[in-house]
Image (cartoon, rainbow, N blue to C red; front, side):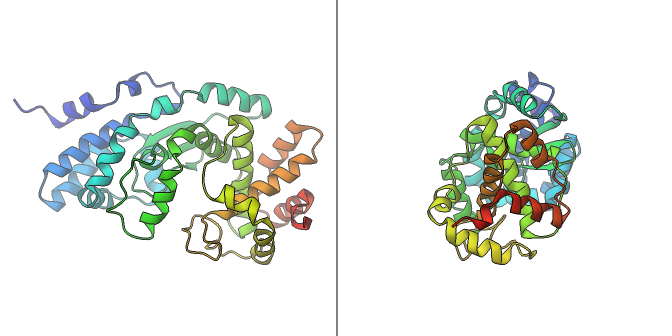
Length: 318
């Protein structure tokens, strides 16, 4: 007897998803893997795209749809990735079942966040599978976690991926992001409390750095990425180049990049922003008030951001 596809998908949903707390949504993960199996069994490329649309995207959660909007994912892109990277998908599949376990500290962490920042607004956290363009992002009051990235570790097989994605993700997965999931959730949760920004490197770096600082303050952790070992050893060099480039809008050397930049290390804008936030908070007698000022900073206002950076004193350190 052949079971209907929708019944197969329901049977494949992780049991943990059924017991998920209200603020965490994981149901898209089970739908993704049911769809993946169907796509792998379907030889026709156009039919593969239709399967993704009908069985993953159309019944997907609002969080999945938001993730697709923010990262411009399409049914065709999903189908092509499923077809092209079987070793990658097979290696990451069991790790994506850890979404609820990886979020086990969320209630406690949000309680601590609220104690530190009483104006905290609620947000929904959705774990869905994307196509390797984010381990975490936001849209409005939604935290959007790319489970195929955020829950990975050194066991993920990246051998089929094209460069420079392959090299960057090898470093990323070797940092065991799944073990740092609590910090990642908090980093993105902070973003749901902040104003959006467009504009200069300084504006983007400070927004990211504040999220890093607050997430570390609550979780006690930072990502085990090269930027946090390279940064302290090369801070003067980083500061000098940051001062030279901070008012421009070219992020290529600093954020959302690969290691193909003058530093040879990706995402040092996070480090610069983190250090600015850290130095700012060293000067605050009232921690809650300082945290509130950082979170509520108008990141879209270059003058406000520049004043915050100047107040931190980080640019003047030698």
